Amino acid sequence: MQRFFWLWVYEMPIAADNSRTLNVDSTAMTLPMSDPTAWATAMNNLGMTPLGIAGQPILPDFDPALGMMTGIPPITPMMPGLGIVPPPIPPDMPVVKEIIHCKSCTLFPPNPNLPPPATRERPPGCKTVFVGGLPENGTEQIIVEVFEQCGEIIAIRKSKKNFCHIRFAEEYMVDKALYLSGYRIRLGSSTDKKDTGRLHVDFAQARDDLYEWECKQRMLAREERHRRRMEEERLRPPSPPPVVHYSDHECSIVAEKLKDDSKFSEAVQTLLTWIERGEVNRRSANNFYSMIQSANSHVRRLVNEKAAHEKDMEEAKEKFKQALSGILIQFEQIVAVYHSASKQKAWDHFTKAQRKNISVWCKQAEEIRNIHNDELMGIRREEEMEMSDDEIEETTETKETEESALVSQTEALKEENDSLRWQLDAYRNEVELLKQEQGKAHREDDPNKEQQLKLLQQALQGMQQHLLKVQEEYKRKEAELEKIKDDKLQVEKMLENLKEKESCASRLCASSQDSDYPLEKTLNSSPIKSEREALLVGIISTFLHVHPFGASIEYICSYLHRLDNKICTSDVECLMSRLQHTFKQEMTGVGASLEKRWKFCGFEGLKLT
Image (cartoon, rainbow, N blue to C red; front, side, top):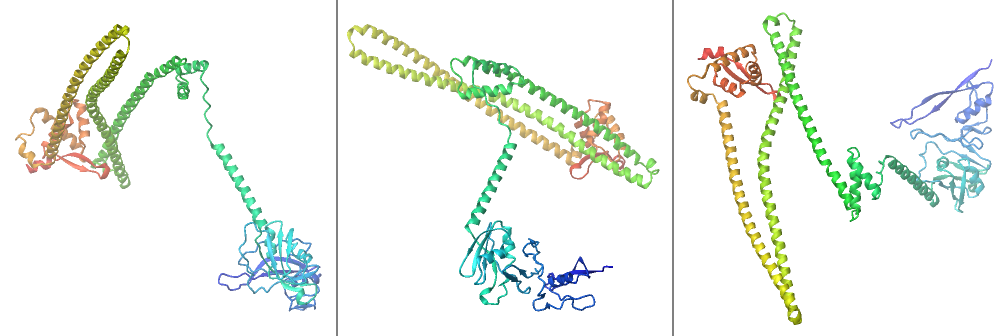
């Protein structure tokens, strides 16, 4: 029966506090005890004395000074023929290096307690290493034998001063070569000083490496630019089709498209391009005029479409307002249900949880009702403001159109006056030239020149008379313009006075509503002036008595409008403000839900009066 023995591999990682802790890796190897040589080789690779289970040494030729047996070479990652690359080692874990045996030399690892050898900063694209500390008797063949295990060597430049430069085929091979830094090299079994040395491997800066790295970076940049360009071309919107050149055939096609509403925009763009290119000439002017006339015929269609859309918008606004008013009515009905349920007749029959839910629902419904009511009132205010703005704009527009017409007439008269002056100067110059030519010419031509002079003088007199008429008309238009400006100033003053009167009236109304004592002095002895007002007081008192929490003036008026459509909100509010001992106004709500409510206080007022 064959027995197996477990071999545990021990590691010594450095802890955070620089204290060495012993960790046991659970990776185990099973070796048969029938093969003591394999067991001794494994113990030798760990630098331990080979012992059996009972503690006796298996092989007597173990050298504790070297930490190995002299007769058995240890297995190392750099052993020739294996091609084993050491895996990446974490920086916080110490590296355990082994003896490396080559054909012509032997490499002994450095002391593990010493710090790792220093290296310079790695140059970009480094493929070349500096190797120092070579034996004096070391040859290029020995260097190749040691470092060819790291990878393919392209070139070696050896110096006479015990160092060399080695260039590898790839960058990762440099990291393998740095693994050998700090090793002691011995040629054969000689102990002569010239046959030994301590290797120092470091990064080297070579122009060939830098050139290849720059070429690689440029290639990557070109690929990135190409990729970006392809992405931009993929995402770029397609360019519009080119506009065809003008011809009679294309002109007839565009003219037909201009008459079609669906192809109008495309045809107009083509027409615009042709005009900007300068395709209009005497031969094609009529065709272009007909196309422009066709484009102008669409103006009426666009105006009608705009009017239809505005009409649809007004209808939608009206529908929204009606729907909102219907929602408000339903909210009022729901709130009335909650209020009736909160009365003592029905309230006592509900449980505590049901009462709480009813009160919460009532508050929510009232808040939503108030928000919708404010929205409806805001819509009505906007409509009233738009109506007043339209009236003011119409009056101002009519005045501006009259003024602009007069200004345009005066400018036209000025231009005509200037043109007549220039024509008069031109005629004078011609007359002077003719006079000069007359003195130099022969007597045979005297009758013809006298006729020309007479004609010119007659034309000059007609131009002067026309100029005088134009000047008189210009003065008259200027007087009319000044008169209109004075009228405009008077109208503006009247408008300002009316605005001041309106603001004063609004202030008086506000002060009359806010103050209580002045109202008592100014009101007559009988606040109810007619039987109709007495009926209104009775109906409003009954309505508010049903609503103990009060109601807004809009809610009261909506109830009264069911009885009589002619009742005005302002009259009802004025009547209620006169009867201070019967009705009182209170502010309810917080923030955006702030609302004025009227309450019935006749029972309290009966005690006071």
